[in-house]
Length: 525
Image 1 (cartoon, rainbow, N blue to C red):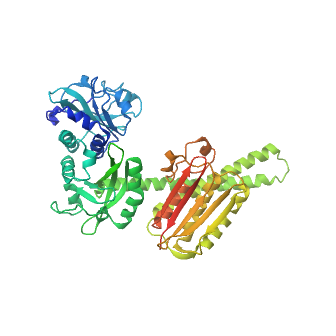
Image 2: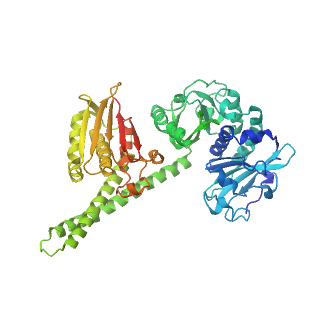
Image 3: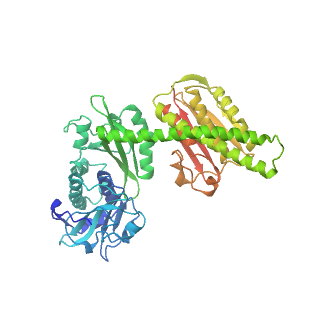
């Protein structure tokens, strides 16, 4: 059990009743809760107001508000006016049987802060929770929690935090008060990428003066070129679609040096669910211990993939050779059932071989990285080579490929890489299309000299919920139709890596039951 941190916190300031209407509204409340979640690096944050009149006033990020209504975490029975920490919810009598602990999302540790009204009555709580055990919050995190209190009080006078934050720099200053104790980079920008403000710690990190006016600059001013492209083509669209994005990134120091960071991008919405502004938190990974841990994790992952792949290849080669000899049936003793068993074994051996090839290709792409070796090639030659590779697969499935080029094209690329992308996309289309159907391969020149390739099928399609994940390694759609088709789940991930190494982009449009269109763009080399 973990005690209240009475010695680590001050008395709780009164919460005027009008705050309930502000903080429990989707626009204002979610904006503040998202900021607190990112600052504390936890997946779940909620604010709850108890009592018959206010029992529905729950706002949450990372959890369904209806789940919070069933919970007793930090309700009035807890008492006390200090920040409370529970390091292990399964060992604390107050939480061990709570619905959020014994069932989804399986909260394992939490930090909470009570909310009181103008008369000093406890009316609710703010809770930050994690689904994994973690170390006890440090003074820095406790101070962030404390600074959240005046931010809630200030929201009462503004009534609509989400709508005003884009228009008035005064709101950004209030956010800075929340983040002022942090050395992390915290930035705010309009949806079109124009900077509204950067916190003091962020300014120090990138070599900017606290008195320098950064408003009006584009976010590109704080990132190297490759990262700018990644933000606009991947991070920001995903944040707008899903609420947030997190990944490794780089900040650009004023002296031209680059800083390795873990970056989170948040899209903030108003009460009408319209995205009003973006915010970002960048945590410096230049610290050698943190960076070494991250690099060691990557090294172990690569070593695991390489070892497994190579250790599998040698026995698999022997198995395939043995199956081939047995299939010859030189003694004429194989029954039809025996032949069928050998056919199935051979089919699965080939599938395992393709999986090993994909693992090694994924590892090779990760290790090589950087810029591909480019040369000028005719698009027609690329297509001819791809169709030759795919001939056997197409003949078995009786699928036709219809090619369409708006004109003769040359493209500066790594031809082996682009061929691999096309093979993966066409192979994917074949797997999910009915026998005897037609797949279209279209090539179109773009205005800037780049080339757009499109692979269009009339197969089973992809549901809206799955579209954002189709390019993730090892991921496959969780539907009976998709699971019936065997695959490694690596083909589209490899395709994305190759396209992005060319500085291009890859995307998909699909409707369940109507087919899919995969497009990728190769820019001017």
